[in-house]
Structures are given as structure tokens and as C-alpha cells.
Image 1 (cartoon, rainbow, N blue to C red):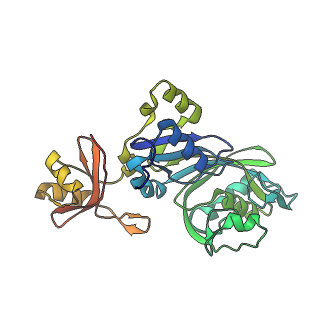
Image 2: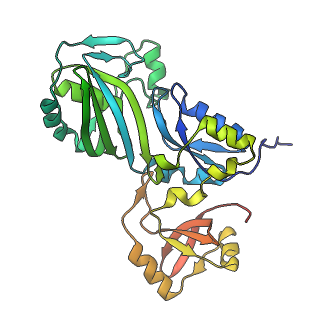
Image 3: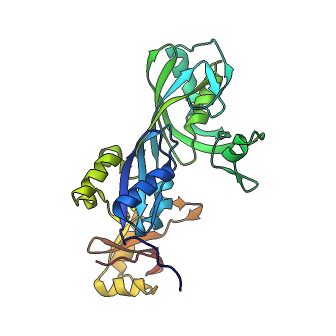
Length: 318
């Protein structure tokens, strides 16, 4: 007989303000223990050095993780000039140095080349797989790791301030796959110097904002008082840009059985008007719609040809 997974059926999102020196995996485990949840995952790794928004999905919310991971990100970070490390942050060993210190106007002028579509080589200390092995494992073993450049998109990159000649603070809004550590390396190179990340904080991930975040110690205190659920956001929070179809109890039942439902012409037209090009995890989601009953997510599916066909069902009790 198969062993039943321990824990409770908890469904929703926790917007954790990840503390310093904690891995994303450790953070997920900590939140899972707080709720005694059966299943948990996160939307977008944060390095131990980084703090800020780490959306953690519990239960059926894990089915919406790809939507959060493909969402827009905002980072605030500090570059330390004059030294490049092997990890491209302050935790690594120095591998190159420079006496050059860029001036504020030079920094501002250089940033234009890092906005829009850019080619970026990820850090060798990253989770990217090379021949089935994680790049950071190979790097730690002393092997030479060569990663290919990837096309990424940076919406905006601004200089926030220069507290001293050795440091500069930035804010960046970007899409999926941008490595802040690589950006620091490349900006420094463009300015004729070396650099690495001294501080990093993520303030936005898709629909998840810093104002909604909860620190781990606060969440634990809420759990001690039996109020941890107050920090739990609905499963569909990560689907904020997906059109919503309200369905009846009978239609919800049909959808959970994997059956399609007929759309009234008026509803079909309304959904069509809300349609926009959308790609998630490499898949075309242009026709994707979220079916809800009484504010609870029922199913994701395609709305076309006058029907709604479920492709992913949410198994939650009202």
C-alpha cells in the first residue's frame, strides 16, 4: 500500500519576504511546516544573498506557478565597483580587480545599452543544467563551465543613487530569466571596471507585491495564534491577467469531470474581446480562461468555438 503524504490540504499563495542567508528551498520548507501543508513550491529562485518577494504556492496553487514565474519582476540592488567575484556577488572569491570607479553621469549613459532585448550570459554559479548537471555543482568542483548567451528583456533600468564612489544603487524592471548578477558584471565591464552584487532585493513578481508580503517570523507568530490563514492569498492570484468566466454549480461539476461546457454567445463575445497574445512556459495561452464559482478557481481551459474546454482542474472543496 502506498504511503499517504503527510500534511493537510492547504491551497493558496504566501508572499514571503525571504530573509537573508536562506535558500529558496529552505524558505519553502519553512512555510510548508508553518501550515503543515501537503504540497508546496515557489515561483522564482532567490539567492541566499537576496531578500524580498518569494511567492510560495501551497496545494492546488502549485498548478499556477508557471504563470507567476513568467510574470514581471522588479529588483533593487547595489553594485560594488572594483572587484569581480566568481559568484558575481559578495559571497564569492575575488577573481579580478580594477582601480577604475565610474562617475554618476557615466553610469547613467551606459544603462541605455541594457534596456530592451539584450543577450546575457548567465553566471556559472547558477542552477542551469549542463549535460544533466547543475552549473553551480560543476563550478564548485573546479570544472570550467561555459554557458551560452540568452536573449532576455529588461523593461527599465535606473540609477537610484551613488552613496559613495565604490557603490551604486539601481532599480530594474524585467522579464523572466534575467540574472541581476550577470547584469552587474556586464554594466561594470561597459564602464571599464569590475563589479559584483553587494545587496539585492526583489520587490515584485507578477501579481505579487511587496506590500502583501509577510516576514517568516511574523508568519510563525500568526500560526502560533491560529491566524496564519490570514496571510494566504487565493489560488488564482497568479492568474490576474487571465480572463475570468463565472460558472454555475452544475457547470463547475461538469468541468471538474473534464467535460466542456457551452458558452452563451454574449459570454463568448466578452471573452473574445478580452483575449490577447499570451505565452506561458513556452505554450500559447491566448485562448486561456479561468473558470470560477463563487470566487473559487474551478478550472483553466480554452474558450473558443462557443465552448470552454478545461485543461487543468483545481481540486478544492468549497
